[in-house]
Amino acid sequence: MMTEVNVPANSSHWVCDAIRKIEADFQRSADTHLIKLDLPYFPEIDIYLKDESTHPTGSLKHRLARSLFLYALCNGWIKEDTTIIESSSGSTAISEAYFARLLGLRFIAVVPRTTAKKKIEQIQFYGGEAHFVDRSDEIYAESRRLAQELNGHYMDQFTYAERATDWRSNNNIANSIFSQMKYERYPVPNWIVMSPGTGGTSATIGRFIRYRCQHTQLMAVDPENSVFHDFYKTGDQSLTLDRGGKIEGIGRPRVEPSFIPGVIDRMETIKDVDSVGTVHWLENILGRKAGASTGTNLYGALMLAEEMQSRGEKGSIVTLLCDSGERYLDTYFNEEWVNTNIGDIAPTLEYLKKLG
Image 1 (cartoon, rainbow, N blue to C red):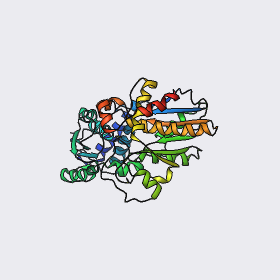
Image 2 (image 1 turned 180 degrees about the vertical axis):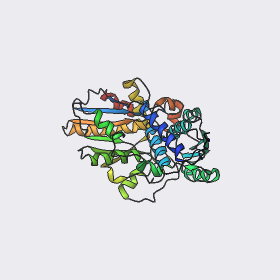
Image 3 (image 1 turned 90 degrees about the vertical axis):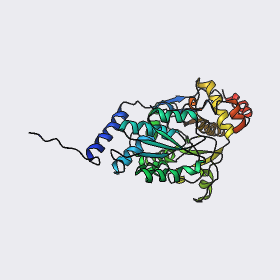
Image 4 (image 1 turned 180 degrees about the horizontal axis):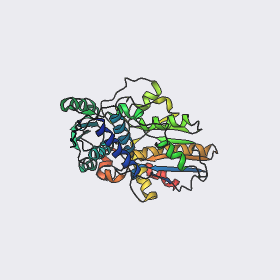
């Protein structure tokens, strides 16, 4: 007679099954598109958007969430009954809620109260819970407190983002960009432009460029009310701000452990009016909305294109479309909210008209 064996909750059997589920989900997902913008103003400079909004959870953070779960599972931090806690401005939390549901785990997102309503609804759609704090700099301590209180695991994207993703492998975003560019007019980008939130993606791209000995340069673009650019210039890790920025998903009020300035060749701060104005302009080109972090990225890419053209240079620039603008109908695409919180975007729109 065969005896039924009860597998304990902390057994490697459950972990192996959890990893299998995540890898199966990855195999069912296609790569994201690389969109070439048609901008006659730049006849010898091609600009591309890597469209990360097409992931199952609608943003670049889907890649990060998958890597963070695999990293935590392989480190033995997540068990069958572990509650997952994350500090987030929304998009990472949405993606982590997706993977937590896939594994049958409770998920709590610690988010600023100002987080877009649509993001909260999506966290809840995937079975997650939203735990609000009044200020963006309060998310860290509150996440640690909840993890201790519930005997859960604080995922801590801001610490582990740069190490959870294998920047040498063939399934990261940098490798995808270079593979998709292979048959383009200028196949090796002159620049890749990235706005850091945790710093994990910029670390992955910058390391990959160096590892593969590419001639591409990496420019990081920071929104207003973020310390990353000042840290890049000064090296002062103690920099903090008493408030967060208005461009969700990027920029931070403190220097995050995953932000690696040494892999970045250049950094610029983009004004919030330019970030938001750019996504309104982009809507007329793509026929759909993108989040304001995409505007930060693209405005930086357009700055570089102007500089290259003035020097008579030819080449290509790649940047990221981070998420859909449908998440921000009550903010970046609400005229009253923009006027109150961002300012007059008309001058930016007027400037961008000449480009296409």
